[in-house]
Amino acid sequence: MAESSHSISLDKESVSTTSNNKREGHSDNSDSVTKKLRSSDTKEAEITVPKNGSELYFEIDADAAEDKGSRHTMEDATVVLPHATPGKLRCAHFAIYDGHGGRLAAEYAQKHLHANVLSAGLPRELLDVKAAKKAILEGFNRTDESLLQESTKGGWQDGAAAVCVWVLGSKVFIANIGDAKAILARSSPADGSNNSSDGSTPMKAIVLTREHKAIYPQERARIQKVGVIPTPDVHSFELTEREHFIILGCDGLWGVFGPSDAVDFVQKLLKEGLPVSAVSRRLVREAVRERQCKDNCSAVVIAFRKKQ
Image (cartoon, rainbow, N blue to C red; front, side, top):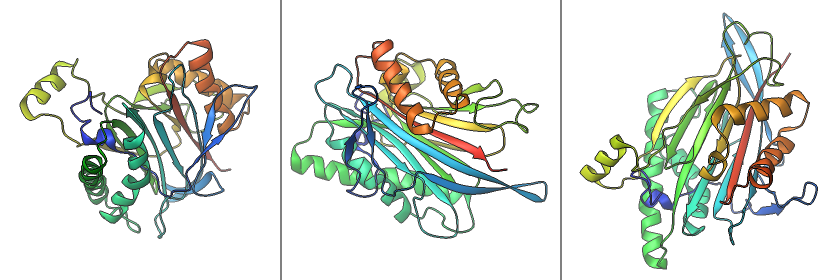
């Protein structure tokens, strides 16, 4: 986040949940793509969405993959938590922390950000959207403050961009700082009701995040006025039958994939029946091996599947 106005010490942030989130080597046809372990053995969650007096049931299936590209070290950290909190309100959490100048900040955010969001009051029963957004903002600020203290003590010089998703009941919250992005695949109103995330209908790519880079006039003016800050952009939307999957990616992925290109790529693989774990690996492998991404490359694919 050092390059972004919003990337300050959050530069040095990362979310996780437990120190069990170690990296596990995974080879797919001898490629160097690796997967992140989750804090739970299951990578699926179930959510209920009210609709016209009845209820829709969705499964969330998600997985992450990463490759260091031609870099000497891997500085990204990912989070895949289909069951991210106890309580009556179903919660899932996913994130990518893109380290800049090192991995320490990304790992710190991976370990502490979600816990700080929970302690800041993320709703666990009746959903209050305002309270949820406030908790996310406060969680980022708390992580930033504690990270600055740790980095000062340890002499860290690195930072991190962040893109995070929380699914609370039927509401999806997105927060980002820096140049990592979240892209949503959404079908048209006419097509959404009879199809699922197997990719059987054309999808529109919706960019859910705003890049924080000084090359943009609005961002440059803000930086010059107030300096670098750790406040993320946070917004939300309601999950319906039209939302099929979300792709989280670091800037390395989006350097070689456009939003629509990535949605088409993932949609095709889901339509072929590949599991999300294989889809995430194929996406990263395509970026690094075929499209020559030289940077670290990380992706999280989150699929919403309607239960019949």
